[in-house]
Each structure stands twice: as C-alpha cells, then as structure tokens.
Amino acid sequence: MSNYLDISKISIDFPTPEGPFRALDELSLRIKKGEFVSLIGHSGCGKSTVLNILAGLLQATEGGVALDGKEVNEPGPDRAVVFQNHSLLPWLTAFENVQLAVRQVFRDSMSKAEMRDWIQQNLKLVHMEHAMHKRPDELSGGMKQRVGIARALAMRPKVLLMDEPFGALDALTRAHMQDSLMEIQRDLNNTVVMITHDVDEAVLLSDRIVMMTNGPAATIGEVLNIDLPRPRNRVTLAENSDYNHFRQQVLSFLYEKQRKVVEIPREPAVDEDEAAPARGKVAGLVDRLGRRA
Amino acid sequence: MISISQQTWLQPWIKLARGERPSEQLRALAKTLLVPLAGIAAFLLLWAVAAGQINTSLGAFPGPLDVWQQGGALLEEHAAERREEEAFYERQRERNAQRQAVDPSYQPRIFPYTGSATFIDQILTSLMTVTAGFVLASLLAIPLGILIGLSHTLYRAFNPVIQLLKPVSPLAWLPLVTMVVSAVYVSQDPLVPKSFITSMVTVMLCCLWPTVINTAVGVAGVDNDLNNVSRVLRLGWLTHVRTIVLPSAMPMMFAGLRTSLGIAWMVLIAAEMLAQSPGLGKFVWDQFQNGSSDSLSRIMVAVITIGAIGFLLDRLMLAVQSLVSWDKSADLR
Ligand SMILES: Nc1ncnc2c1ncn2[C@@H]1O[C@H](COP(=O)(O)OP(=O)(O)O)[C@@H](O)[C@H]1O
Ligand SMILES: [Mg+2]
Image 1 (cartoon, each protein chain N blue to C red):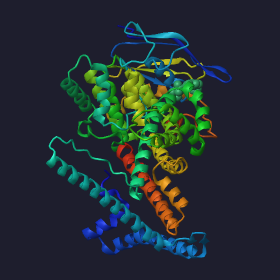
Image 2: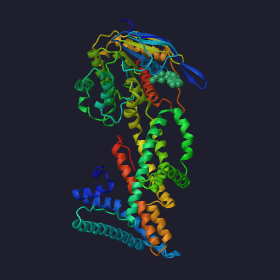
Image 3: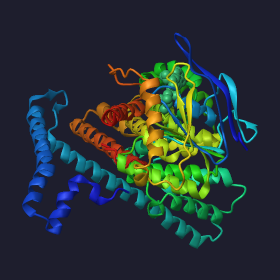
Image 4: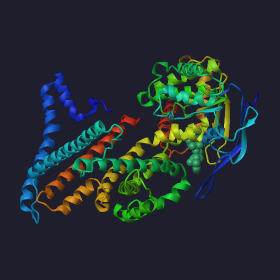
C-alpha cells in the first residue's frame, strides 16, 4: 500500500478577470495508509487549494486524485475535513453536530443506540464528554475545534483532511490539541493530511513534511521524512538534535530558499482568517530564527 | 414565552422585591419608569393645549379627556349590544320552549342576531383579517425566499419584479383585487364574506416583499464553511435546507416577518377604509361620515387603538423571534 492516496500531476486554474490564474502546477504526491503528512508553505501558496481538491470541494483542471484505487471527483464523508474555523452548526449542541455526521454516514448500518454510543465514544476521544450538550457559543475555541475533530473522526474516514486546524488557537491550547491529536493518532492510526503554518507543529506531528513553493503555479519543493521515534514528547524533543535538525531544514526552506517578501497590506486582506494569524506567526518565526543564528 | 427576568423594565421591581440594594433599584426605577411617564405626560399636555386651539366644523378638536370618555362610551355600547344579543337569543329559546310544549313535533329554529358591529367587533375583525393576510403572505414568501436565495439565477430573475412590486401602495392594488375577487370568488353560500377576501388579499400583496427579500438574503448568506460541511456529508437537498439553510436564515427571516406584519397592519386599515369592508378602518370611515359631535373623539380612540395593537403585534413577533433565535447574544429590539 505505497500509494493509498495518489495525487498525480494536479494543476488548477482559477478564472479571474485577467484570465486564468494557475494556482497549482503539476503537483504529485503519494501518501501511504496510516501516514501523517503535513503541508507547509507560505500563506497564499495554495495549501488550501490542494486540500480542497483532495476533499473534492474543488476540481483540478488537469491531473487527478485517487483514494484507495478510486478516483476522487466529489466531496464525501470518506474524506472528512476539519476546517480552520471549526464550522460547527451554531444552533446544534456538540452532540447533535456529531450526530448529524453519524446519521448521514451510518444510517443504514447502525441502530439508534449504536449511533449514540459511537457519538459519545468520539466525543470522549477528544475529551469533550463533559460538554456534550453545550452549543458552540458556550465552548472555547479549542473545545470547538475538538468537536470538529470528533465530527470528522466519527465519519470513520479513509483520510482525515485538516486545514490549519489549530491556527486560530492560542499557543497553550494549541499544544494541548497537538498532544490530543498524537494520542488519537496512536490509537486509530488514521491517514492524515494536515496543513500548517507552524514549523514545530509540523515536525512534532508528522511522518512526512511536504514543503510547497510559493505561488503562482506552486508545487512541491521538498519532502522531509521525520523518522523520530513515537511517542513523541515536546519537552524532551526540544533537546533532541534530530528534531532540531528537521526544524532547521524546514525553516531554511521557508525563509532562505522560498523567502517571501512579506508586503505590508494596504487594505484588509481578502482572506482575513488566514492572513491574520499567518502574519503574526511569520514575525514570530523570523524572530526565533534570528535568536538561533 | 420569554422569561420574566429578561424584561429589563421589570428587573428593578424584582430586585426591589428581593431587597437587593433598594436605593440603587429606586434609581433604576426612576430611569425605566419615570422618564417614559414624563414623556407621556408632556405629550398629553401638548395635545390638550393644541386641541383647544383647533376648531373644526364638528366643534373643537377632542382633547385627551374627551377621548377617554368616548373610549368608555364605546366599551359601554359594546356591552349593551352583547346584552341585547343575549336577550334576543333568550327570547327565542323561551318562545321555542313554549311552542314545543304545545306541539311536540315542532322543530325549533334559532334566528341569528343581526345587530350592528361595535368597536370591539371591528377590532376583532381587523385582527382576523390581518392574521389571515399575514399568514397567507408568509406561506408564500418563505418558500419563495428560500428558492431565490438558493439560486443565483432565480435571484437575478425575480429581483427586478420584486423591486418593482415592493413599493406599490395598497390603494393601487385594491381596485384590481376587488374586481378579481368578485370575478373569481363566486359562491352561493360563501364561507367568508367577499370583503374579507379582498382585504386579506390586498394585505397579502403588500406585506409579501420584506419576508421574501429578507429570507432570500438570509439563505444566500449561509456561511460557506457550513455549505462545505453539507457537501462533505452529502446531505440531501431537503436535509440541507432543513438543517443548514433554514436555521442560518432564521434571524433574517424573522426580521422580514416583523417588518411584514407591521406593513400588513398599516395596509389593512387603509384597505378597510377604502373598500368599506368591516374592521377598524371602516369604523373610522363611518365615524367620519357620521359627523356627530363625538365623531372626532371616537376616531381618536380608534387611532390610539390602532397604534397600540400595532405595537403589541410587533412585540409579539419580537418574542417569537427571540424564542426561535439560536443566537442568544443577539440584541433584539
Ligand atoms: N476561488 C478562487 N478564485 C481565484 N483565486 C483563488 C481562489 N481560491 C484561491 N485562489 C488563489 O489561489 C492561491 C492559493 O490560495 P490558497 O490555497 O487559499 O492558499 P493557502 O491556503 O496556501 O494560504 C492564492 O493566490 C489565492 O488568491
Ligand atoms: Mg489556506
């Protein structure tokens, strides 16, 4: 099973008033079953576009994606998506949000009681059983994201697609979420494609880091195998020379090879949610890089 | 419906009753109660002074006191009319009982009472008509709004027509509606009078649009992430509308319904007046034609009643709106 998820030579053109805009150009990647792959790259390079093509929410102009031998051309619950902004239905409780997914996926194969158990089991997995009957507006950002992950896991997907799932969270909450995710991953061994801006997050969680070149016509720049032993512990890893070597390689790719001139936006960015944390993080990374050098 | 503690004007009273910092509550009371009362008092004073200055062919313009008296008189007339009606039926029952005693095979018959409609009767008629028109309008407007909100093409197709029909005055519709109802609604034994249908349809035509437009805007504004969730889950069209679109659009939809109800009430009075169909509008018109010395006071009673009912209808919609709203943080007013 060397190519469970097979992305072959995908290109995409977005129609714009000035003619087609080629966001991705002949991007290919093969992902093994049970592998955890991170996509990293500068803001606007096309990471979300890749993920949306995998999800079937966007159609590649050229090339294609196959999952488990079948071509992907529309969205479906076998490719569950965790969005950056939780995207829970605000009028439903945590339980009901997961229930919506479970009903839809397992309506023919599970009884009512089985569904209830399965929903609870997934909420437990993300440590949300205590707040099952709360609505999103009563939950913190991290808790909402946990429910979003529970909803995705409850679909029992073949691949879990995550678009900067912890990007909007504060550093401490993010660390908690990363630990939870590693714990879940140890139990379930899902195939995961995760987009991130965060170098530490990518190295800590991934089996492989895929680094994307800057757009337009973005593609894969380098791929880094992270063969650190699991379980991984963020505190002990900080002293680990391999870990620091991997970090350094990603940072060097992003800030030396794919250096991006960060312009100061004159008007609010179109993609606010993405751009805002990105700008903060770029500044933070440059800062840290400076201290190390 | 809405919990008592949510009513801000009640809160100082509740806290006062609980004995929470009385001086603070009294100050809050002064703010929530005294200031509005002072406003009303000033209005009444201005009214009384201004009324004395205006002389009409039917005598001086009525001041607050005249209106208050006529209000009482109207209530008394209503009570008298009801007593009269009760007496009428009582007489029939007695007569029937007597005839049956003499001739056991006699089939008793009860003739309906045909007294004149009182002020209260007119209010009830108006309320019924506005409810019917508004419900009918909502039943049409909400599905239409959902459809055109979901489809860009339909939206573009319908938008010019809606924008064109929206500002049309009820007075322009009325003759057309009257003619069409007369032509279409022909029945030997009509379930409801023609005038009721005419007013109802006119109300409906005028109050459709805010609900259609607001529902469409609410539906079109569904968060794209939620649409993507729906696509990933492969929700069927109906499930998608029921679980994602409708709840998203609910706040906008109710804002539209509230505007629609307000318009419906305004339109109804005008329609009744012009179409001579029973209701508060007709009451005003009759008083105007009547031209007795009490007429102006009675019209003022009707004006105040119309305002009060309009206000209550709006509060009712607001209560329903906050009941169905999932966004409890929204400040509805
Ligand atoms: N629907 C679209 N129409 C036109 N351009 C788009 C569209 N979606 C994305 N793009 C462009 O494609 C590029 C990649 O976007 P995206 O995948 O969102 O970047 P990332 O997620 O890496 O920040 C950006 O330049 C963006 O402006
Ligand atoms: Mg993105």
